[in-house]
Length: 132
Length: 132
DNA sequence: TTATTTGTATTATAATATATAATACAAATA
DNA sequence: TATTTGTATTATATATTATAATACAAATAA
View 1 (cartoon, rainbow over the protein chains, first blue to last red):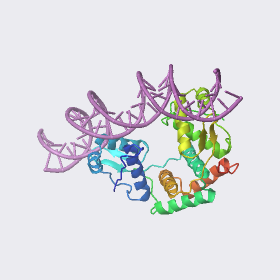
View 2 (view 1 turned 120 degrees about the horizontal axis):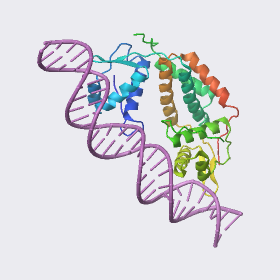
View 3 (view 1 turned 180 degrees about the vertical axis):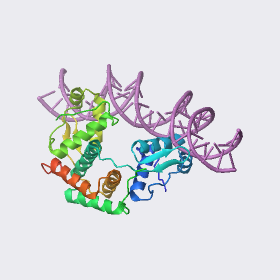
View 4 (view 1 turned 180 degrees about the horizontal axis):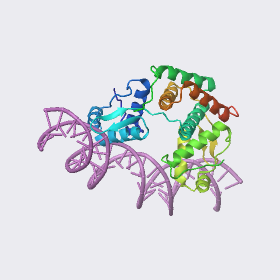
């Protein structure tokens, strides 16, 4: 998997890395059960520090996207989250993005079409949750 | 307009303030042509520093949500943005949020329904763009 | 056993971001 | 002229981000 980092972005490197891995899982480029490169390998490939990679992996673990096993490393293992808290947080994020879009001249139908396009583009394979 | 700030949030205060003002405009609580409280007033009301408010207002200005006029203060004046850059940035943000939702078990139909609900909730009045 | 590889913890350092405070300034205006 | 506006400046403090060099426990392969 190819990781693209923008060193001049205002988004921290560890977050860019985290985001790209999440996208990779959703797209099916990273499959359930696959292993991420070791923190040292990823750090070398991406030209960043080991602890920056570790921070990204730790977040992914705490968010339930991967499981970390000593010796074998980080395994793709996305867990569903049906909690009210998750839906609430999502709704808040979505509300802001919708407000911004609306004010910039993207109406309801445009926005929904955009979402549908993204679903088509992303959702090549329906990702199964991890039960390990 | 009531501003709620969470001092323990990981989201910077100036960003929370910026976000709430954007939401306020989209909801119609802040109408085109209205004036925001002065930076000093807002700082006092919210219990934060003047320069923190100034940072939020400056960002809103650079993003085209308000216009700032000496003496009269900050006027609500949302400008449309039909540029490719805006749509591209929006699509990137949306892609991430959709990827996360998908992995957490929220499918296409759930997501679209959620969006529609938010549009209904927010869009009491269709906000006219500012041409001043 | 020994050596190696894994993620992680620790310590140090540096740069940048965030937030506050006090003061001052130019522009507009009453 | 005095006041109010956003803003610039300077200083200070804390938090975040990123790097670097080590070291460690756990697992595993030799």
